[in-house]
Amino acid sequence: MPAPTPEAAPMQGLVASAHQTAGPYWHLVDFPEWADTTRHFAGNLPPGERIVLTGRVTDGSGAPVADAMVEIWHADPKGEYPDPNGPAEEFQGYGRCATKADGSFRFVTLKPGPVPLGDRARANSRQAPHVALAIFARGLLQHLCTRLYFEGEALNETDPVLGAVPPERRGTLVARQVEPGTWNLDLRLQGEGETVWMAV
Amino acid sequence: MSETVPGYRRPGLLTQPPYNAPDYGSTRLRHPQQELLRLPHTLTETSAPRFSPQRYPARADLTVQADGSAAMGERIIVAGRVLDEDGRPVRNTMVEVWQANAAGRYNHPGDDHDAPLDPNFQGMGRVFTDAEGWYRFVTIRPGAYPWRNHKDAWRPNHIHYSVFGAGFAQRMITQMYFPGDPLLALDPIFHATPDEAARNRLISKFDLELTQPEWALGYRFDIVLRGREATPMEDNH
Image 1 (cartoon, rainbow over the protein chains, first blue to last red):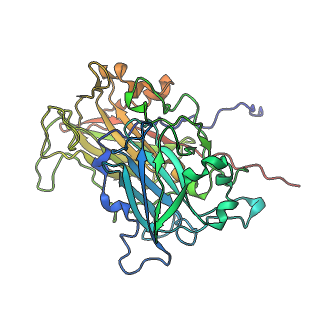
Image 2 (image 1 turned 90 degrees about the vertical axis):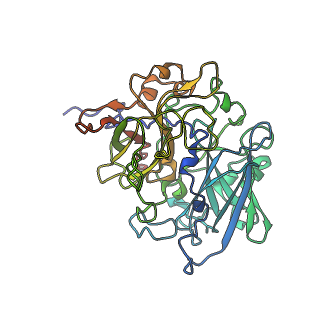
Image 3 (image 1 turned 120 degrees about the vertical axis):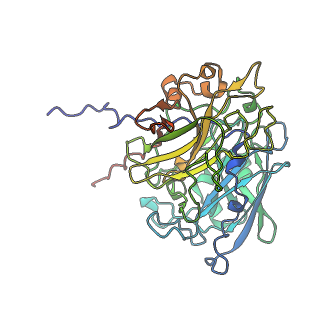
């Protein structure tokens, strides 16, 4: 049997479908309660700190982006993600929030813990606590991705993603505690102070 | 930065639309001007939220209200599979859809198109894939509508799709189009994807196999999410 050539195409040759904009009418799938990831846990919240995440999304002219869908995804306070085969009633650090007329969003969630880096060579290394952000909107043919970090975390100093960002732009990823338990990070799609957007 | 867990394959340059697409006016002030930071995939990107049908109840028939009232327009069946690039079914994943009504009007306060709303059509659906990656819903064929992007700009008939997958890096929102639509040739959103084959895969196929006799025509629309990278070679030494 002839050996396969190194150039052999992937087995099925399928190519990921093209993204398209969510458009201005995505609110048909907006469910405001999704902005609170703790909503399923009345008196039995998993241990951890309940926090509020806020921010404003603005465009290249500084105008508010009033029609964006903001999504968050993050680990639980222990730094763990739910087991794909575990009970669906586990805490899920997923939320969705529509921006308001002033471009603002607001989530209620639990502060994530440090997530393992997953690097064999550095088995005990952990990423700084962070939240994945995805922004969908009219004018975004694909969603924009970035991460939110928390100011003052010791692990921020060694986090490989933060470390790959030029120091002068790192601040666009680091939320500040504006009042106890409330963390704010503004997002700039374009121009001065543009958020460090990530190719995920 | 060293790579960590095996992540997802990166998209081919021309198979995805760019952020900056001058023919689509809304991209002008919304596309990043700085180069994107390439993010290595970690557990954050390779894990994804789970949506249980108990907490996220399915709504697979958009055409009938709870009281039995029926929406106006041409009823259609839309079904397909959600697969990854290796052809593996993406199981138990949530698929959300939303769309305009038969007259080309969204049930949305921001839509001021002079076309009638249908009190019996909200235009929102939610279904889950089965063990083979299949999903299916029943809806009304959406109408075209004008959108002011350029002279005589009308969006081709389309249904919006939101899919999660098994890793947050697979998250995607796209649109399903209909075969033979003359507006496709003129649509800058459809044409933003440079690769012709890639954009044509967003056009559903008319499918008699999905058609239910004497009741509704069927359309097939498959969605492919990113596949996993090969596991890094182990060093034996």
